[in-house]
Length: 285
Image (cartoon, rainbow, N blue to C red; front, side, top):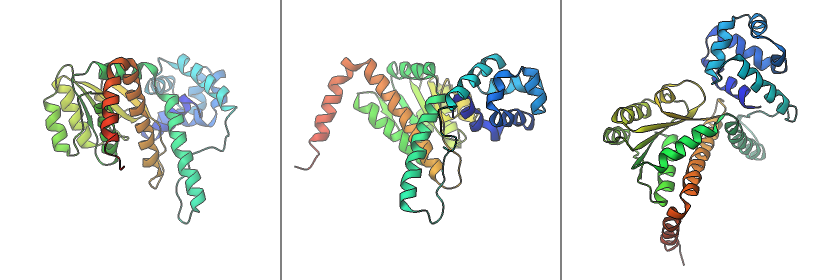
């Protein structure tokens, strides 16, 4: 499923009833949208033109015309996809072979779908901000802290002043001491984690550039950040949804790290070599 339709699926449960009517009609009839004027879509979905425009804005389009162009491209690419491909949850009694295939497929699909909704400019802005940062802090709790810690480890290896505290109280206290020239990154798939929100809010108020890594759509964390890097993952009942979102967010961290390292390769090459040698000495002989 291509970008525009992925975005709709990501936010449909948070839409108003009238917006949801339009969204569901589009998901059910994607191939018809390219032939419909805005008034026709409003009529067929039982809504209004204002609602259609509002939905387009929520999906990060300038208006219905831009949205229709994107949907047309999406439906063309969908002709080459397997219509039966979808996220699969873990079910009681699943065979191990099935679990291996389903979890691996979910993780791959979350990365593929994320590539459909992430924008080059947002990634470029994030990379540039990190390159110029005096200090970088990564905030996350629970499974998101694992991603934050991985980010700290990666950027520390190229001699960036990167921090990630496991204690939310330390996160918010440290955020208060940030300032202009620093960068704070909030990691929360839902974008609704209170501790992460409070830390990034304090960092922003202190003057730091703020970056979010959350699911697509409006949420408290992304709403207050300067740069938003959205990921796509399923919301399914057991834990494979959390697994897939974690993989997609780790992929974003890898992209940012590689982007920074590539731009500053001559500068970071010696740091990578030093840390590689230091780690090699820790291996058993």
